[in-house]
Figure 1 (cartoon, rainbow, N blue to C red):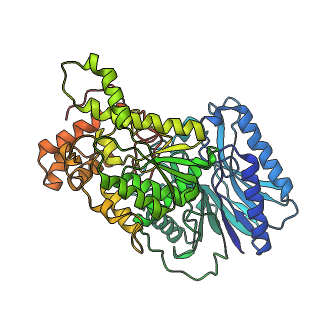
Figure 2 (cartoon, one colour; figure 1 turned 60 degrees about the vertical axis):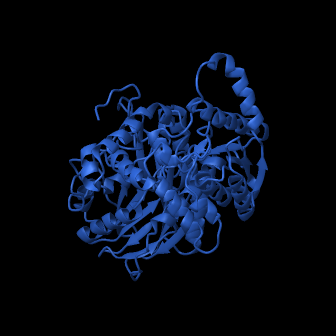
Length: 547
């Protein structure tokens, strides 16, 4: 039996657009002889719908969308398996169920509900969904289908050293002797996720002795990026088909007879770049915009954001603004011009020296008797933020912020200044990864001028300023941040593992804890690591932490 994995990019709440994609994908699958077309978790309504699930009108629209899909595909010989949210029974205590529906010739043959509801990091499904208490195998043309939804496949006691749930829904399904396992997923991307997901599903296929198919969502929704990478594994766990990463795709295969194919080589540097391009494109367009603004400083962070934006939206939709202050070097302006030319984006200059002096004069009576300090540095950043937002208002363009994860972690950023914007494109990249991606971009030709990569990082807000005036070198800072922010290691453990002075690690940790109030006012961060500054990180602001 030929089965199609129809990997689509849905938009939350766009029932008309999502149905069009599902119907078109099903027709393409039918034209190529597929008996079943599989779509991702909540493909009909989009994932994650969050508090829309608390609106009865939204859930009612989900139900009518299923009926519309059945009617529109009644004439096709291809059955559909697709994810959708549906109303929970009255008095259930939760508004919805996370369901997979099996449609064939206009009829609903199965409505399978999700059992394991993740409630960690970016996931909040226990807030909305009622878990099912039973799951059943369904038969189609003599083939017994075990249908699971995302997390239901993530609790194999033989694979995970520590399980998150007491039960494994697949064990109940396997007791019903299925012929094949089909998993509908909306599994977000982060560093190394694709490899882990593939290994986990291969272990399940090998354990159960039946083929496993996983159709994953692709596209960006707010901070989350879904990589797709849908896969088909034979009963031995060998890879026999894989859809594209970071793009819509349709893969058709007979999982019982297809020969194994080589395992893909996962380049996490390339994957991070492609993920950020996809996340930027979808954030801007799904929010109803087409153009973006970037403050181009001549530094490596804004250079990478500009490259991502040009790839995501087309160079014609990117406007870069240079805003030199009294402390900006001529080299930074020249580097910005070269970068803009390399990318084919428009570059304009608004000098802020006069504005800065006017601000300073206005504040002189109140600042009398004080020495220039961080206040005057931040004034320059906030002037730039004001100008960017004026351009945004005038021309309907979104501002992309250019701060990296290292800066956000320790508060080396200015509220209402360089933090102004609609999306923090590289807010989940530590500084050393920013450099790695820029070098990867330059692998065939120089896109990021080498002078930008080679110069010591500097905010250029005072004479001869360097980042190392305030922070440890990024080669030291970044391992501390990864360990503390992403893995929750203690300062003592970090110091011992890396042979760093404990006092230095504690100093960095204090900066991280003291900057929480800034991060919770930051633009949404595109997530590419296991723990980003965003919806998956939930720490109080007013707190006293002993370091």
